[in-house]
Image 1 (tube, helix red, strand yellow):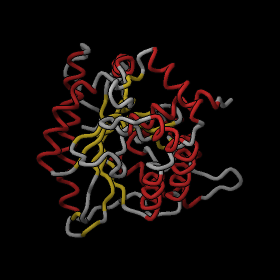
Image 2 (cartoon, helix red, strand yellow; image 1 turned 60 degrees about the horizontal axis):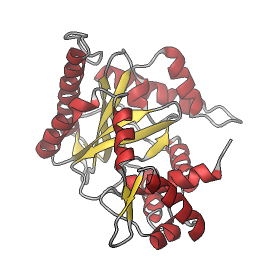
Image 3 (spheres, rainbow, N blue to C red; image 1 turned 30 degrees about the vertical axis):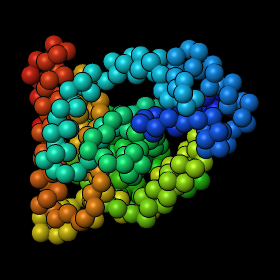
Length: 305
C-alpha cells in the first residue's frame, strides 16, 4: 500500500537530507515539492513540534532537527563499521583526489550513506541519500559474496517479466565471477548515467520521491543493455570508468557496506584502476579488521583477502 501523506513528509526529509547545508522557506518547499501550501505548512509544523525539523526564528526557514540526529545515530548502530570508515576514506580522498562514498543496502534499495571529498551535493552519483534499486545489474559488489540463492534472485531481477535474456544472464554471471576473483568491481560510463544525472538535477526544482524512483528504475533497466561492467583489465589500455567499488565486511561473510569511488573526470589506464582498487581494498580491510576487533571477532581475515 502507498500512503500519500507519509510520502509528503518523507519527501521533505529526503530533500533536506540531499541539501544538508541549506535551509528552505515554506514557499520554496511548496514550489519544489509541488505541495499545497496549507498541507505543507501543517506537515512542517508537526515535524517541528516533534524535533524532526527546526525553524529559524529570523528567516522562518526549515532545516533538519535534533530528532533526526537521534534517528540517524540509531540507524548508524546498524552499521558498526561506519564508525571506522570516516578516517580511512577522508585520507583516501586526499591521496587520490577522487571522491569516495559508502553504500549500504536494504531488500529493495542501494543507499548512499556517506560521501567524502565531493565538492557539490548533486555531483552524480554522490547525492547523499540517493536510492537505487537493489536489483541487477546494480549492486554486483554486494552480490558477488552472497549465497547462490541470493545470486540467482539478483540475476532474475535484471530480467524483464515477459522474457528471458540469456545474453544478459551470461554477461552478469561473468561480471560477478570476475568481481569475486579480483576482489573489486569496475563499472563504465554509459548514456544511462548521463540521463539519470539530468533527471536528478531536474529534481532540484521539482522534488518527487515517485519521480526519483521512476528515474532510477529506468536507469537500472537501461544498464541491462549497456556494457556496464569492466570484466577484463589490460594495464596499458584506457577505460572510461564510472566507479570502482570494494566490499566491506562486518559480522558476516556477506558485505555489510561497499566503498566506492566517484567523480572520475578522465579515463583511467588499467594500471591506474588496479592501483586505486588496491588502495580502496586496503582501506576496506583496515575498517573490517577494526570493526572485527571492536566486535570481539579477532583478527579475522576479510573474505576478499
